[in-house]
Amino acid sequence: MIGLLEIRRRKLQFSLIALIVTLISYLVLMINGLGIGLNQLAGSALLNFDADAIAYSDGAGLSVIRSELSQDMVDRIVETPGVDDAAPLGYVAANYRYGDGEVSSAAFLGYDPGTIGEPTVTDGRQLTPDDQLGLLADRSFLRAADLSVGDTVEISLRLETIEFEIVGQIDEGAFFFQPAVYVLRDTWQNLKYGPGAGPDTPVASIVLLQGSGLTGEYESFEAVSKPVAFDNIEGVSGQQATVTALRWFGYGIGALIIGAFFYVLTLQKVSQIGVMKAVGASGFFVFRQGFVQVLTISLAGLAIAVPLAWGTERALEGLPDAVPIAFNTSTIVVTSVSLLAAASIGALFSARQVGKVDPIIALGQQQ
Image 1: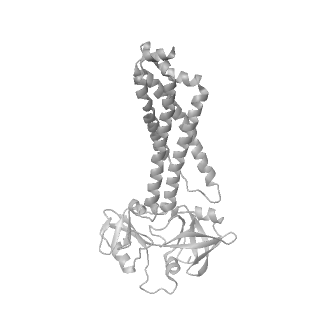
Image 2: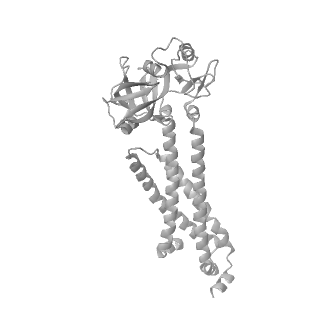
Image 3: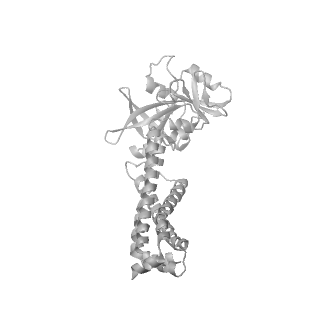
């Protein structure tokens, strides 16, 4: 085709355009990757719960931080019609020390062994009822603290420092932008409320539920699906809105820049377009050659940007302080299709100019 032949003959000019397309594609891909990474950091542990619904205390506003459940409330939730299985779960944020006295925070989740709240261990062993000072640590926790199964770690909470043993590794992700750490529910209760807690002390923050038709507002609690629970994690909605806005800005800027480049190219080729029209070429034929160029350059840019983004993700994962970025197949496909659509829309800017070219005037200008 004439459009492809022109690309071959004007390699430098089209290479510069392909470079711009590559950089825009890379930028949008990285923004989308950061959005997924931040989502995983915000609550991948919640999305990994083995549950169909999550129950919160009434008035907590679907906040795990504010939700507190007594034993009586947990019993009522478990006895709700339609519940096939359930497990109370506690949450508290606590600091831990590692390295040369460095301090960081982790999300401590208290569970009962043998229930649906128990995470899958990838290395080491599960907690037993005797492991009051044992914990299961997510691999991100171990990597950040440079620890491994069998090591001990100091946990600080309520002006106390307690030494725990890491008995197993899990791959559950993060919660509230902190690595997930699982302990026994009795241990969690002592961490959050103190060892002298009385009978009226809350025994859980939420209850994981399995069954059908469980979501809704009840007399003393509210149950929602995991996606709804995730959307109500503090900071997630604002974060997603920001990432979405950046993504659409990227698409819009890409369409404008690609359109501007090919519009300028069209203006430079007015005389050639006039010659083609004079010998019988239609305006659609001429535009189609330019459209093929847009698609070819855009595909070439994506072919470079996608592996470059994957490579950046792998490089960032190796850093001591990992950057929250992740990619999946659907993200790559959706982003690529969206960028191609944006480039096609940008190419339409030059369509009007092609249609307006008068062969007689263009040939007269050439003379």
